Length: 414
Image 1 (cartoon, rainbow, N blue to C red):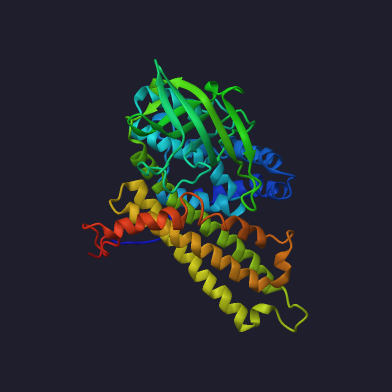
Image 2 (cartoon, helix red, strand yellow):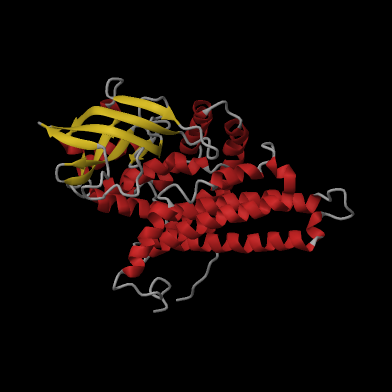
């Protein structure tokens, strides 16, 4: 079979549509987010962008499964779409990440009744700006969430009381944990300890109230300022026993599968941020002389930095496409591709953008110059969606140690 890397006519149209939407609906809001007075003000602008993506771009239909009237675009299609959107506003991916994260385990392990009750309201257009959250991270850390006793591991618990689960604990960092208004998202999947092991339990917005749900803090982050990240407290939240996703004890496996897919998406975000930073630096290098006789791109050292950056951006894009395709098609080597994409892409983005800042020089240090914001955003990529040091490299180490692993298998060259 011939291997090629050209976009199909349908993918070309998707690229153009996403680029035009980003130019019209996202770009005018970027400055407002960056200069917002705090997390709440930034989130208010983000909610406008989120709603526009739903109503003007039809993003829910693009990511929803066919049974909910969606088209469920493929891996490379999704990479193309998210790169175009995230090049302008990377937070737009985070804004819908929670929805995609809860979609996976419910579709895989949920019952048909759960599909209709939990997912349909988010995907059928009845909610103007639907948000969902995957509640995994806790204030004490996430890397050892499934550690056996005597390690503390996950601290959030759910106990049975008749025909209900009663959930208690603090969660942190997941986008939209507090919802748009501080009263919770439309749907939250909580990873918690139950008597039979770590499990996934759904909480619907109607089950949250001031006496059982509190936003302890909204985090004022350096980058990705439109992503409202919070610490929340669940205090004896009661949900029906039917809100258990899968069986008790299925939590680690379902969470691992869910967050493996999200690892590939980080490489797409990394590509987008590097692409935007490259545009900033290239425009500067081709138009600025810095009081010299020629544009600074005529100086070899500047051209070298730009050339090397461009090559690394292309490499990250290709590994992102490969990983996104692998996870969408169920490729048996998807785990390895997704881990490589996340680790390589996120670490590369920080380094490449830092090098591009050197092309611009001291002008880049001003908040009014956009490239510094690309770095603020990229600094999150190695440490969110599973930190590289604490989680992703450990997962890759476990893969390399397994007896059945073959170094050529993922590439198809074994």
